[in-house]
Image 1 (cartoon, rainbow, N blue to C red):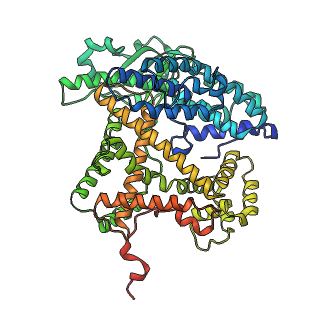
Image 2: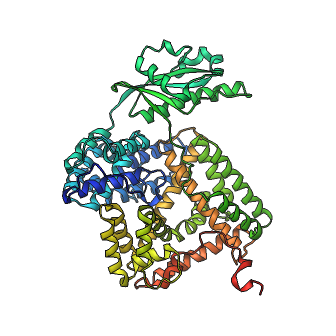
Image 3: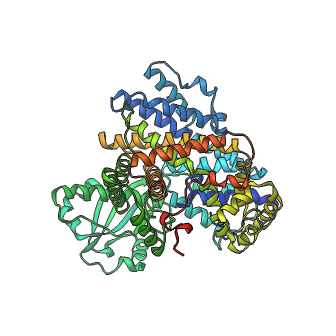
Length: 605
């Protein structure tokens, strides 16, 4: 979360809802946002499509019917917690679908088809837009929060590029030039700007000369070689190409044009054009293994209704991680791991195999392969137990790791956001927290947000945040969450349920990729989630192995994690407020690997 430039905003009380919306959308579209605050992979309209897809795959004997109940459960939950979806329904959700529905598969399909038409993406999006305009005018922040998330999920699943949405948002609301933002009605202009209209595109790339060896096959991929860029009839495109320094001085390369084809924005068009080139390159590699057709990352994109083409470069893929250690810190952590890592035998071999697979994923750029490899990593890392299905085994092993530090990660990210906003003011306020001598700033944030004696200090923070409405809203949210154990327990239980749904979705998608070659439109979101899951489990496993437990097998590590999680749940079931010394339950593992041999009591005199 970042506080963006608002120099062109004419700040007034009536515009607070619009500014909160712009800040929340900026967070939703930032690729390094904590997964808790990212757009959902699917919402009600697209869960309907997923249910129908599963029914079709069951009928084609590609997957078992037992896969259906979990998605139906998620669909029902999604609609019950979505005011827009409920508003669009002609009848309550029970008339369309039930978890324990015993009717024939064909009857279920017909009801879901009716539900899908009722919640069609465009119908749903239009209603979201209408409700958002009202909520912004009335400054209902929780409604704006819910609508912003659902609008983003809907647009992305309709095919709009997240990178395009982010660029349009920053250009409209946060750039130093352009129209002044002074009235909440300007949300209408922005919504018109991001509405998913279809356009026709041509995309230009600089490609290796190897493509000329398959010149006769290019028509099948809508690709055309341009031997001389002066032959390009569109003068503005030619002019833009000549202005790009990294597209000049071609050596063993040539220009190609991909298209025409339809798309929703220049970045999704760029991505779609790369898929044509990927298909050609992969097929060519079947016959010629020594070298692959390659291309430069920058492209020139022509859109039918734009006066000028644009130069585009796509963001890094879904495996990109935000908060790596710096080189010095990474080397120190590696040294601790090598000194203290206690895994032995086959467990050590399996762990090494997981690190190999993780490295393959990071260096690869094909999301389909990344998802398959990430799932293989999870299967390799998590111990198998007799009598359990593969997916249940993965879920039972992963959930304790992914839930035990969930609340801590929320508080930790708030601490990071606070210092990103203004480290001097953050430090000044946090140093005033009671019961926190010589403690880290995440602990001080925990005390600030959870302890009643810090109410006045919280009010001081709220006042200092001024126009950063999103960070103030987040502080309110987390403070309410930490007000008692029951709320924390309910939040963790919901998180656990969502993790189970997502793990099953990753598993289904992986199986369909492997067995039928079909690819989901939301696969990049699944790769992000699978990568996050694998990293959390791997680092927690290393911590337990390097800690005083000195666990020597993965079976021991996963059992210890399960017992720690049960301990946390047992603690939260005891009613009462959260006290300062309860932080140890929230933060179950240290941030970094620990050298247990160098504790202060083991130091030599």
